[in-house]
Length: 411
Ligand code: MLT
Image (cartoon, rainbow, N blue to C red; front, side, top):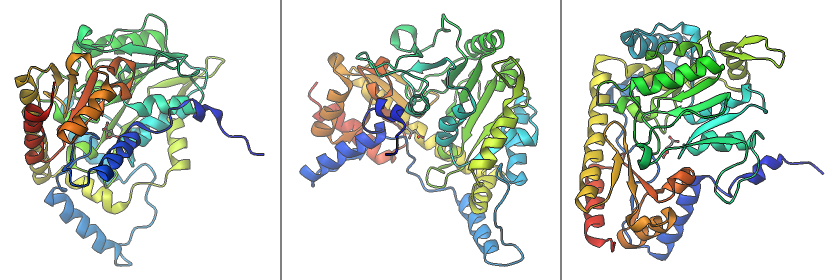
């Protein structure tokens, strides 16, 4: 009789976005004529930029000839891409990274989910609440938490509530924690931290030998000044922070899978006896053992993002989505809803009318306006009474969705 990992039994039956898909499918079956607009999962809708397509076509042709064919590549990614990342994403911010501090991967979902593997199971983990469910669910699977309580919280996790009352700015934990997940611009609230606010976290981490896992998936959406694009803009962050970035959101790679994780050699973890080990070495060991590299064709596509043309074309995509964000924000404000985010991020976080439960509002929006969004409580207990809409839809659908909310929703 094989034993299962019983930690999995602590999890809700399905992953948030799978549960949403299930409800939408059921609704579509009952209402086949309904024209459902999906502003739920943060998936892009614009096609890949032409410069990326060209580069990928060329790479496909290379794969057709023995002289230019590529088999397994380096697990950490090809140097041609790593160098571009270092030169274009970091050097202009005054951040120097070694080539062996950047790990190309198939996504920030996998990397933020997997990174916890290199830490002990008895560490204390903190996360902001609401939060991208991958961070919490993977810690549950690893056995770092107790059971899920009536209050929607797992035991042994430090939750840091972020809500309108504190302007979505997380407060430092009162107790000492070992690992902190931060995502800014934030998914799901679409809010940001200034450099000064982020510095408090870096200072805390340095003082407590805490590691920060910083998810910067949405950095390309930052419009305002004084919002850090990278945690390494903060002095000392290279001692304590790992940063995750992706081509999914800035260049439309959700269906292509390409991302990267920065693990500076100066970030340390410790044995029970207090001996320091570089996380870079451990992550390299894990990555090379469990991952065989992103396809050459995809990495060639990602490299093209850094050409002049690539920058222009991806900037145009971001502008397109941010125009949607404005449409959503202003459209909701016009009907008197309270909205947050959507200024430096492709997510709009709204307070449900009359303090309605998040899932009740999900059903209402689906049934009355045929719009799919994401219930805030799906991201954690502090998301209760909130709801997320994404700006990643088509512009015409986004405008139509807002019009439906204004005219069909019985608030
Ligand atoms: C979301 O909707 O939160 C995104 O799809 C997250 C992701 O990129 O996995």
